[in-house]
Amino acid sequence: MEKVKPMPLTAYKEFKSIINEEKINTLFQPIVSLKTGEALGYEALSRGPEGSRFYRPDHLFDYAYEIEEIWKLDLLCRKKAIEKARDFIGNKRLFINIDPSSIKDSGFKKGFTKEYLKEYQLQTDHIVMEITEKTAIEDYSVFNKLLNSYREQGYSIAVDDVGSGYSGLRTLAETRPEYIKVDMDLIRNIDKDVLKQELLRSIRIFAHTAGIKMIAEGIETSGELKKLIELGIDYGQGYWLGKPKARFLGVEKKAIREIFLWNQRLLKIQSKAEEIQAEDLLRKDEPLTTESTLGEVEEIFLKNSNLQGIAVVEKGKPIGLVMRNKYTLIKELNKSRGEDFPKSINRIMDPRPLIVNHELSVSDMRDTAVARREENLYDYILVEKEGNYRGVVSVASLLQVADYPIRKKEEEVLR
Image 1 (tube, one colour):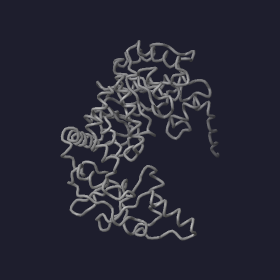
Image 2 (cartoon, one colour; image 1 turned 90 degrees about the horizontal axis):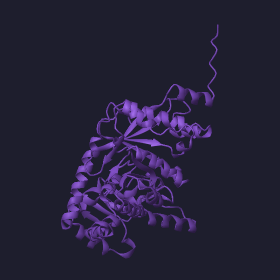
Image 3 (spheres, one colour; image 1 turned 30 degrees about the vertical axis):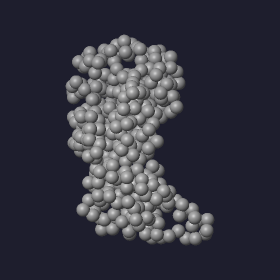
Image 4 (cartoon, helix red, strand yellow; image 1 turned 180 degrees about the horizontal axis):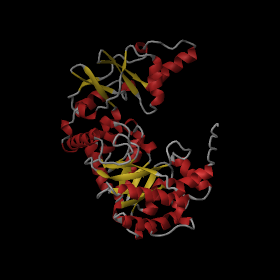
């Protein structure tokens, strides 16, 4: 007899099954000190059953909103996070996401989370309630009511997604949380974007003045990590530091090493600026070769909107530089004249870029860079060691370090 295939569950039945049978999986991602490399704590990240339509948290929570059962889901996610974290959290912080709209739900019960903590022998002062700014800014009275409710019970507060909208600084001024988490869109490629750096620096001065600790979200590259350390950000979170796991016992070793080494270099910059060398500032961008196609150039610039230049090497030795502005200009000129775009990278690269030895001092490098022709003033500087390509230094990062002592004093005055 032929087996009858089971009918697929409707979205509502599937959702109710998740709630009633508590089918929520919790992963943990570390939040890491950018001074020591130690984990401050872990953020609990909720997922639905694998393979289901509600595996992704955005699908799960959007549907809970739609059927007005966000409170039930919010509580369940908190409960599962506490249950799993008790085995390894120790004296670290546990960051738990909560939805501000939950407080408006008729099922809201003050002290519910505290009861679970007592059951699993965890303390409220180890719990950080994380609230997204995107939802909270819609109603500050509701937002502050929620904050006060948790503060009265001994929890710390973190505001998520700061920098994702126009109300970020207002949110900080209105709520004064213990932590703010900077939106990952602001962190993405921050090592290559001077405007993002200045914006983050402004938020940091504001936060430090108010006694608020900053957490940079979505760190995915070594370059982003180094720039955040340089900018004085307190903590970081992202794949480069550690991916979400069911049970987290440590930070990525490569990240701990980089945090230690870059802080050592930063101390050198702060105390002995005259001893800083090109090696201390370089960014290890992947170069092109003389055999690379213009299609590769186009693809790299499209994928990295903040990248302004690409080094060109031959047999490992730096021989040229393709800057975005000049590449775009040549492309547009050929198009307007109806001419074919050059096929060889040799036709569009600068064959005489500024190439410096990795041991050249920052002061000498600055003097050499600003002495260039005006049209080349902001071109990347290529760094070599024993004739081989090591990386690039942007003029922006060079000038930032060159005037670091002055900037440091200005920021101390502002505090």
